[in-house]
Structure formats: structure tokens, C-alpha cells
Image (cartoon, rainbow, N blue to C red; front, side, top):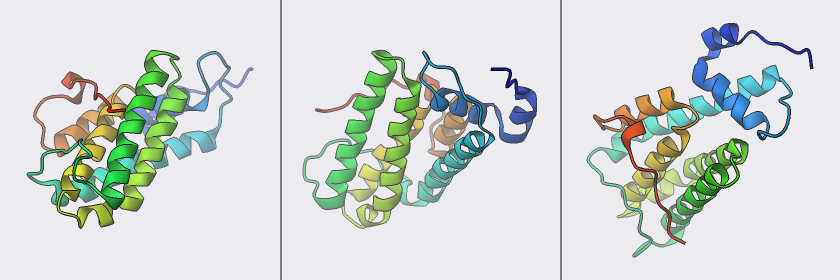
Amino acid sequence: KKNVVDPNALISHYGADTLRLFCLFAAPPERDLDWSDAGVEGAWRFLNRAWRLVEESLDDLQGVRPNEAETGLDGDAKVLCRKTHQTIKRVTTDIESRFHFNTAISAVMELVNTLQSLKEPVLAKPQGPAVVRFAVETVVVLLSPVVPHIADELWAHLGYANSVLDVSWPSYRE
């Protein structure tokens, strides 16, 4: 399409992960990519939102183990837990079966939106911090194939010594 863009300039301004996220999100693999500076900026903003979500949750999640079971949960905590499992299933299917990273990224974006809107009310519940930890860790792990550098850094901020790339892919409950 003769719309060649020098990736080095974008990498030095936004970083390699932002460029990778944009390229994988902008189009499914069987379609040509229509370049958009606004799309790159949108990918950068999303990664910043995900970064802030993790960073702003660190104090509340200190010393908390993730809870991925819906047992005993109600209200917003149950909604967040269920949305997290639905997102794991959707991302797994999109990547493994269809090789559609664009819809997988979209699912993670939806989880980030849900997490941002429900985080405070869920944290107020007794099992809330464990559910939020599960959702936050899931966001990081699901993003790791797409944005490995940022995901690995966020994983370390969550208190893990090993790389997020060494973590097993999460399983979901129907």
C-alpha cells in the first residue's frame, strides 16, 4: 500500500511492546494492516492504563494469594471472577484455535475496563483482594505473548522473582 513507516522512530518514542501491540491489534493475520498513528497512540495509552492498574493495586495486593474460585463470592467479586475466567477462555481460543491476536487483545482490554470499574468495591469485600489479585495477574499473563517486556516488568512488580514467560498459561473454569 506504499505506506511504509520506519519502526525505529516509533520504537524509540513508544517502545517495541507498543508497536507490537498495535500491529497485532490492528488487523487479523489474513488482512493487510492499515497504518494509523492514532492506533499506535491508542495502544500506548492502553499499555499505560494496564501499567497504572497494576501499580495502583500493589499496596492492596501485598501478601495476598490469588483466588480463582467463585465459591463464596457474591456481587461484584463474583462478576469480576467470572469475567476473568471468560477472558482466559476467549484469549486461549483466539490465540490457539484461530490465531487472532486482535480479538484476544480486545478481550484483555475488556477485562482491564471491568477491573478498573469494579476494583474498589471488590477490594472492600473480605475475599476481594484475592479476586483482584487473580484478575490483575491474569491480565499480565494474557498480555505476555503480545507485550513480553512490559508484562515481565509488571510480573516483577507483583513480587515474583521468575519471569512471566516461565509461568503456566492460566486455565479457565466453564
